[in-house]
Length: 182
Image (tube, rainbow, N blue to C red; front, top):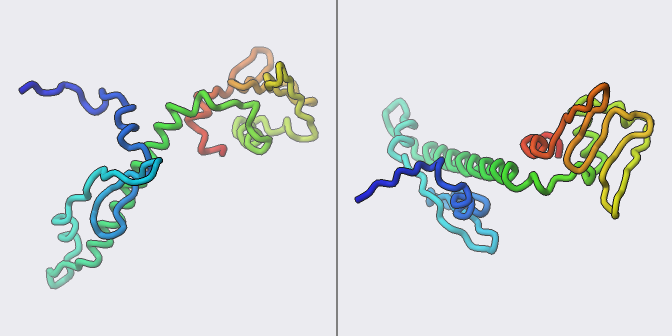
């Protein structure tokens, strides 16, 4: 029998995302199973929580008796924690893989753009300044501010203009940091 040489990191991430294609939850009814709630309804078992022998031995009292209720509560909390960690990982993967093409700085709401520009250190542009938007064929291609010419927002980048132009934010960087702003 031939052994597979691929490791998990070498497998295409699409295969993992296809299998875990919804929110992961931990069995709320004492079954110790992790479930994927599928987008079209229904659920698929993902994994089973193991380690009851070790967990129960963590909850021995002074008489060396096991507090089964405390151990069961701990196991449920651990299962919930693992499910949340999987969901966070999948969300992070989806942001880095799928969100980049859908970001358009020109389409961010004024509040979202203000928060982003504040993070970048250019908030003074919003003080008593009117946003001037340039449209071509009905699409925003650039935003500048009436009293501040040092910052240009395009669909893909935010650029600081001075002696030299420097791109201070790209859609890729924004995608990785999106949770800070929105």
